[in-house]
Length: 362
Ligand code: H2U
Ligand code: ZN
Image (cartoon, rainbow, N blue to C red; front, side):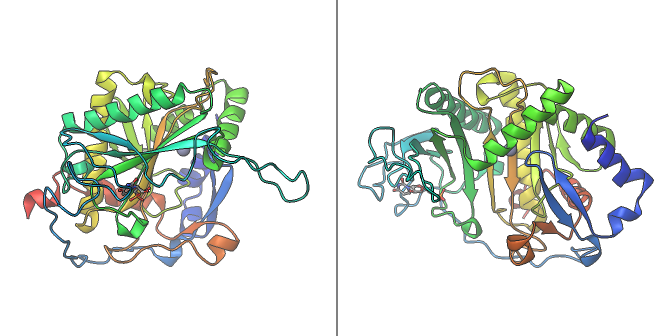
């Protein structure tokens, strides 16, 4: 039995009291602990949550930098695109190898090294008003195809090791433009989160001969209480060690390592899962639910990476309502991240939600 299973078993069945008092849980992907203080907010959703009026967005906004045919902030003009649309970020945080002036490490106490990479923006569709849960399955499959094509092209470059696909959604997450879009940052080095996950997954594979996240998925399916939504290809769950109140982890049921491993059927199933999960998110507080989400793919370094399982993280900041967000401050900045509502309660709450989007009912 894996370490994760032992901890989980101890926590769930034999010692239910541990769930009622403060305890720490190990994030098996990062090797870091999260503090759970269930007694602080036993029931965080007392009664119906007040509705926040959202601005109705038009399908096309002449003032939007990302709508088809419009001029972008950098001066380029978007083509009259009809499906997904990818472009080089006009204000890229990284520059390709050779283009930047490369500072060299001082070799002393304070270290710096050059980082090269590429940044792209990917609009989900021409529609200014349609976020992921409101798109059709074929449209979502096109988005998955576009993320895959970018991963293939960027990952093939000798100067790229990591292709980070992500979406920042909502003003709360600092998203600068409401037109539904994602970003792709491809980097020469593994960024911190992927580097931690690589170490953890490698160590587990070396000890058990199985991908860490396949063992986690088996254990989560066995216990069941943190599962949110599943189909025959993918499972979305609130991880045992979730840090954000309604954080979820999306795992494939088979050993996929990068988006390049998905076939058409897998893309269909993942599109279905993303639609159902994000619809539940939107229905939770009846708003377009803000989050940062992204894929963690195996490094694109030419190695097999049998230890790695492709997965998605959804990190939403909201806690109790459309307006009450969680802040990672104080002890969480100086000590360790923490949460009040337990992952089990969060999963139960998301499980209760309808898979019909609230805008279709209103
Ligand atoms: P958010 O996903 O956080 O909203 O960021 C949008 C990105 O789009 C941001 O990195 C880029 C910004 O640099 N962008 C352009 O490249 N061109 C534009 O005309 C507007 C925004
Ligand atoms: Zn990850």
